[in-house]
Length: 501
Image (cartoon, rainbow, N blue to C red):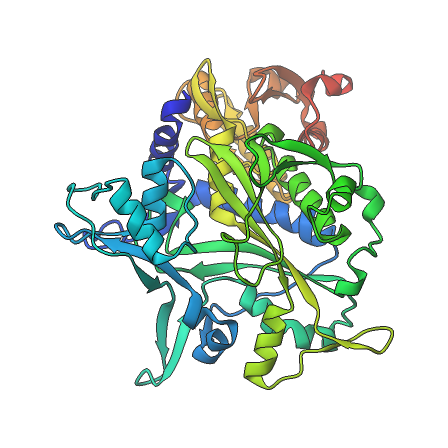
């Protein structure tokens, strides 16, 4: 199934309205924009909720929500107006634009950094005799294209603004306020979930590379002199991370403590958050053997980063970057302090004035969702299904009355409403054979099916069916909430023998 899995995901996404092209009823709608239907949005929301609980809440981060539109001066300060550009190349025949680095990488089967000099990209196109992939025409010279999306504000558009290209800028702009109003003490993470916009020349591979996308952003502010002073270090020091080191073809499992000892990372704080990142995405249900941190070379990473590790997942599209982990040093606060005229220094407990350093953990919401769909798609007796972590499933359970008579629908509706009152998300289906309803439920990843049959009327019991094992148990209706809550924590049906009637 692997070879066609990507196509199967797109087919499922379209048929069940998980995601689909935005403004699709208009033939001239631009590429790179996606809408999410009820099931897709439910999974997407659960991804964010999971991250918020496992990462933001457990790490005691402050969460904000920043504006997506910011004035030009912000991006003068951040450097985006000068340096946020992609290498592009145009076909001389059909006039189609392509990302030069991505096109070359796909053709030669080797990663070509986007930061590569333009003349080097031109030489590679000539050397490898790369043509336009659409019409086989000759390619022109590579040039740089700024990816910022402009947005004019005001009655006559007199205020020049831009849609932010990365969510982190809002966090940097909020730092001084957080220090004053939230009694911020370093090290401290500030997080947010929000949209970002990049004027992609050739959007492709559905929701993994689009113009509008969402990020789960965490920026850790810390004193660089205290990078190794960490309260929770013991929790991760022996935890093994999957690392692809520079110039290596094989993934190594390296303890967090050894990452520091071998100087693969600048200090314990960096190793700690790499560990917490891997733990969180592993808990989401992505197989650990399909995850890795790829050490990024100096020529490929952002110029201001002292260390970069791209967190990637192996999908049907190959290795897909989910998270950019960057040691941004004091670059952002220093630049915004200079351009805004606002003092962004921090007073330490020793009364020293410092500009904090920043460790960035920038995760893609939509890419994470795609990776979860890709790695959870399985082949069962009834066809394809999504073996989702119950906490990421679009519904907690599905309820099926066996037949639409003999008071079964009324009892099923009562059970549904009772569960909904207790904050369970319930899918109700009363059409078709019970086997067909199981298959429809499995297909979108609902972990548990509750069937109301004639014995339910007599004995006040129902059947719970597990999606992955297809095993069933019969339980008393009054125990349903307790059992479902426990099952959501990944306990198995066999653990509930005491509830079986």
